[in-house]
Length: 388
Image (cartoon, rainbow, N blue to C red; front, side):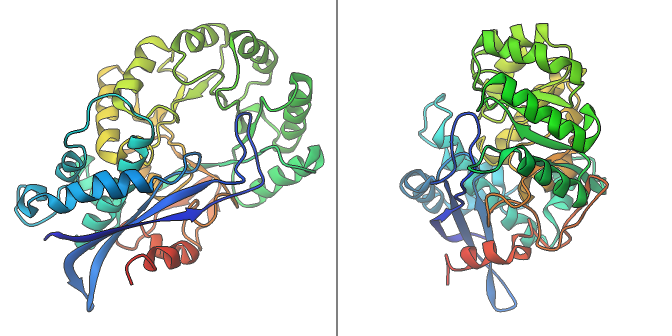
C-alpha cells in the first residue's frame, strides 16, 4: 500500500471556560486525513487525526514539513517487514527526517496529529478496532475490556459561581462518572478552598475529586495549596508548578503526602525521563498524564512507556490527558490506568463516540475499525470534508 495524499484543516473548539493560565475563547485544533490507495466498498481507506485541546492548530508545520516528507518517501520505506502494511514507526521517522533533537513544543503536536491518522489507517486496513491492533502489535494481545474514565471540568466561567459548579459535578455523577476533576489557581486560595469543599459535599469523598492548578504556582503558593489540600485526601493534586521546573515539583512532592499528577505538558520521552529522574514523582502513588496526541504521537509514547518500565513504574500509573477516543484505545490496549474525559467541552473533536455510555466510571471500547471517529457525527463531517 502507499499514501496517496494528506489533507489538513483548522477546526474551532472554542469555549468560554478558563483555567488558571489560559482561556479557550480562541482555541482550535488541526484535523488531518491520510488517504491510502487501498479501496474498500468503492472508496479509499482514510486515516483521521487531530490534536488534543490546549494547543492550537498546527497547519504550517504539517503542510510545510511533515506532509512533503511523507509523500516524498519511497513507498517501500514506509512499509512493515511484511512488505504490505504501513509501519507507523517508519512513517514517523520519515516525518522527523532532518529535524534537530530538542525543541519539543509545537512540532511534537504536529507530528502527533499525523501519527494518530496513520494508526487509524493501519487499523482500518487490518479491519479491526485500534485497541485490538495495538494490543496484538505492542501489548500482550489481551486488551482491557473497558477503561476507567473521570470527568474533567470545574473551569472558571463568567456567571458560573459555586451553585453552577455544584450542578456541573452532579451532572457528571448522573452521567455515570465516579471521579471528577476541577480547576484551582484561578482565584484566591480561600475562594478555591470554598469551591473544593462545595464539590466535596457533592461527590462525598476526597478520593472522588482531583484538582488541577495547570502549572500556575510558584513554590510558595504550591506549598500553601498543598498544606490546605492535604487534609481532604484528594485523588490527586495536579500540576502544582511549571511542568519543566523539576526542582520545585520535587519540593512539593516531598511536602505533600497525597498523590501528585503531572506530565500533560511534557512532549517527549526525554522530558518524561527528566521528570522521573528529577521531579520527585513517586511510583507508588503519583499519576503521569503524558498525552500521546500531543507528544509526537504513539510512536514516541511507546518509547516513554519503555522508559517508565525501566524505572520501575506500573503502566497503571499512566492516565493520559486529552479526553479523546484515541487515548481510550491506547489505554485499553496497553493497560494504562484510565483516561480523561471532558463532557460537553472541546466539541466536536473531544470526547468519545456519540452513543458512548459511562457506567460506574468505566467506558466500553468502540468496535468499529480504526479509532472510530466516524461514530462522532459532527467531527466526522468535518473530517470527511477534507478529502471529498
